[in-house]
Length: 349
Image (cartoon, rainbow, N blue to C red; front, side, top):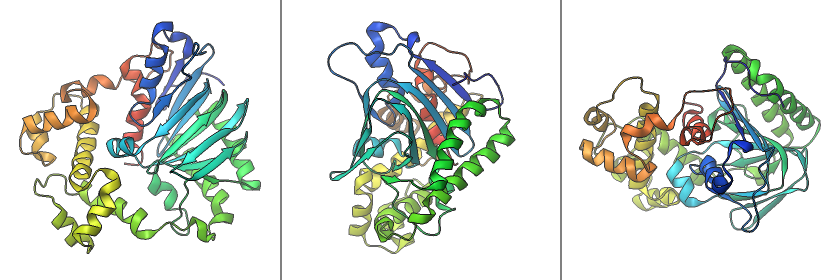
């Protein structure tokens, strides 16, 4: 795996030897904290010598290549609510000492061998046990893939198989080698081609009734989220307004959004996620009173408290969390740890 050398597309390189031995566990957890709980072996040292992560941003796909250590990744209901990220995740083990094992929800268990592409849904619970080795993970904007499918499917834990899936794995092996040299326009075309390969791999499975996604419980909450995003400035956005817009009862609305912490928490999290994106990308000072007004908060103080509760730092510190894109190995600062998390916030928007 070649290190990124081009300045054409956003990318980063992390190396395990940059970690201070006494801080290994804490620093590794920081890299995933916004979207996953990272669980490491409780006993013995964490072997990070030779560990390496390469992140690449290709339009509506983020790519993460990893040479890694034994670990578990958990996406809990609390993290699903706080992150407001619901992308698809496609992972392929390229070389590992043993299979990966995924517990999806409370009952569904999937074992993943080397070279087997597996789709996961970040809006649903998961716990993945990952062996040491190398893998490639694609974070795919949900709407980008859904637009290529003939109907709505439940893709959480779906293994891709067949000739096209084999082509997809070969494509991903090549992608992580050549992507750092792509221009922005080439990256867009490459992302589109990759999405079409994923969709084509799903074609033999698309008629399976087992993959049919329950409409009310899976699609409607995402439509509600988009509606909220288009009404962020309305401080009076309420359950009554949502019920009227979607023609459902209050009890149904509360049930639909209960996994996201409830109606009020869902609205607040969507507002804060959009505000964070604006603050992180700002090139000049942003007035908090104006920002509070734009995102439906009644005062700058109320906005600041909510922001700090959600992200663990002040609005004025948001820009510092996102270090400028770099293609050289760097110490694992908080900015570096947040790089992939910020990409996931803006993916597909």
